[in-house]
Image (cartoon, rainbow, N blue to C red; front, side, top):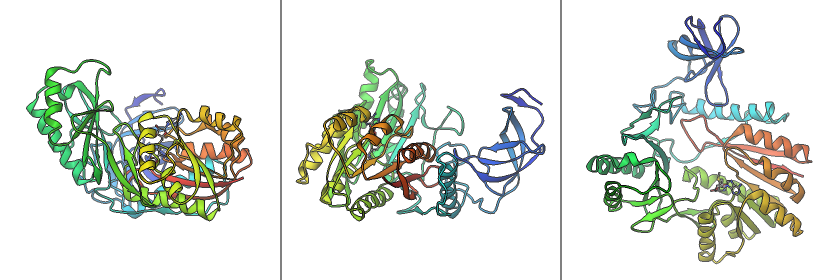
Length: 433
Ligand SMILES: C[S@@+](CC[C@H](N)C(=O)[O-])C[C@H]1O[C@@H](n2cnc3c(N)ncnc32)[C@H](O)[C@@H]1O
């Protein structure tokens, strides 16, 4: 047997992939019965590993040949699907993707969360097209100015020419960006990453670039590149607009608008976001909640529609740019603008608790890492209902377990297919004290 972490010369033999696991990889058992993770492997596939990494307790098939495909393996709608690390489930049929997401969400809630008696399958809601859905695309740039996504499992850039899951405006923007990059040799390499974001109102397309040396001066050629690019789309560097204003707007349920400056978070899939926001608002109304706190509220994606539905509340968010935009959006909609508090959620929640504030409903939508630090304070606030929105089933399950230990019961969980063709799934969990 090879040492843990080394590459074994001998393959794990033939492996049948039984299922998909959190992280999106296939999973099966090798000839000796040891677990084998198969990146890119799909349920029912029979593979022969050509390079295996021995991790002691388990094996990882670093490269493999497909012996026989599983029943849900399909031709991908993108020519880069096998190289690009962006869409790891593109070779899985859409119905199987959705079923698998329901399975991964359920498995996390059972294994990590310790929850029993969950519906099987859990519902996973879909909306809009499964291609062209992505209104926001984050790209890496290498020092040579190559722009793309990382290849699967590496930090090597795949220079995608097109991206079928991205909105047409974003795809077109990628071509425009490359054209200006080619006309200004060396300029793009001064940036380490960028985001292209399309919006139906305000700036139709934004290129937001992040310098390789934050705070350093950009060269004249990089500045000339930015000025040329800004003639075709809104441009910002580290949050600051170059030329025309870079603010963007999206309609939200309840007749309100989300306004987002470059640095404010926005959900990638507007059609599924609409469904998610409606689920939060409808859930709040069905539970007769009259007031709420929205933790990690961003630019007010949930706060604004909840206010528009007649609830009172506060939104807490670390990004000054996001809360400033949220106040402007509330003001414009004739809603109270002073409800948005800028700051760290645990600290701000503690202040609210000390001030004797209480809420019937707490909505929280933390970053992927979850809300561990905020949970003791959330328990102290003791809202009657909690709506937890998450893009990571495992940290969601971990945090729900904490809340269950603090006296909450899991009422309802639903997945949202916010990221078709990837293993990622958004989820909304309702809890009751
Ligand atoms: C997943 S986004 C959700 C934003 C918003 N709910 C939405 O749907 O657009 C998470 C947000 O949490 C904010 N954030 C991260 N850590 C934070 C913290 N410790 N305190 C306050 N906000 C934080 C980020 O700036 C980001 O806007």
